Length: 133
Picture (cartoon, rainbow, N blue to C red):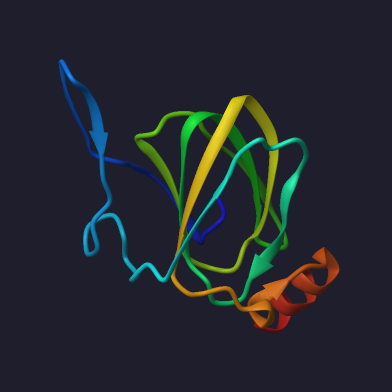
């Protein structure tokens, strides 16, 4: 198993009115959220990059999405298929969203604002960066 991510069970409160889930700082969230973005109407592979410093907490509120995560040596697949399951990425990992079912809607909570300098957009560059980090 590669390091740098974990699958977490997001709390769910259910009653006759429906379900409510949440993530709180100091519990599920280990970083202050500085950016929130969402993906929907996904038609083809997304991601295909890594971050040097950024941490993310990702969940799928509808449908399912498969992530391929890669540390430069090994690859693993993670499927988010329930709004009470989250993916927390805490270290540099190459990530791709590769498979989509039932019109997925994905929300990402990020530890920092958008910074192009934090992105590694070439897999070869990612492997090189990981070997010297």
